[in-house]
Length: 478
Image (cartoon, rainbow, N blue to C red; front, side, top):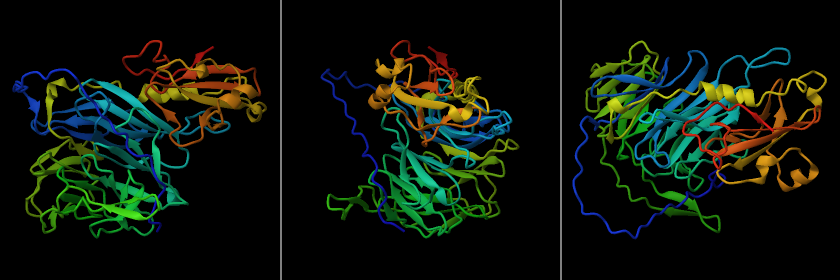
């Protein structure tokens, strides 16, 4: 097992200053109905939803068509320019894939962000994936979102730095040069520590997303344990067992973090988080089967368990075998659960449903379809596709490219792109990014050069006319 992984980019240091005079301090008027207990997010047959633990009311905020997608998540995490947590989840298109002589989809993995108070949904990134059934182990805190993609011995860990604006996901660990890991949990707050389990050996580690190194995991967990949920203060962990429910025990989430020095020698640094008081391990209803997900309440007094297709709430101190204090969403096939912190500026009445991701998923398929003249047995081998990414918030020479001439290719190297069957697609993982990024495409070789522009969230350039809400990615021709 290699001790060091490939180094990843350091987190962006953000700062702000103001020369204005501070206004006199005053106590804000409490918002009637504020979500002091937070919201419980879940995935069920109808899509991604939120549940008010105080009332049991639930709303689907990202509707999904049954049988269309495989979903991982959801998780709560911050978003740019938003003062409340939002939801992230992944999709894998599970519809019949196209073949040489039959129509179908090109399977993509997608990462989406949903704001349940604005009723908006945004694509973060998309990645062509014809080899696996989609991402697994979506985890997040205030700093990083991480997930596992791939299959068999090729599982890789990818991460998104949530302190930055839209950007491609970074690879933290990828075989064969690094180990294959399953992402199982994340230390709350701004930590870079991710709990991972090695494929094959089942050994657990801290993967430091900031320093790009491995640290020993403080607990002896089994090769089939997980996922885990760490309490908001970082002192307790709930572990999903292969059967017999979950286990709660103490955890030290502030072990010394080894960072590579200029000489390549590991330099230990100590985290300010205190060492927890030892807590005897206790089971949470060992009559249960394997939980699909676990989440702590904001005060760590309750544990939400996604099990048996529903959400069950248990008091953290309840004796083993005690029935759940509450049960929600029975019969809806819940498969994931996450619990936000208190949302003082929001009420359940403010929750709004988004349009869902279907239009954007289908829009990408439309945007990447080969022109009819190129989509023939004779012409497909001759067809060349060139793709460039540019930031549409400012004027770029890429947005007017009309042909892939040698001069253009020398000045603006394209992304790796290939012809599939009836579509073309990017080859590199998470090559397609949302936000203000747009893609200029030139298809040539078998047909006269044809240029189009598209984006995951919409085709209008941000520099020309910012779109207030995402729209389908249909190509615009020029």
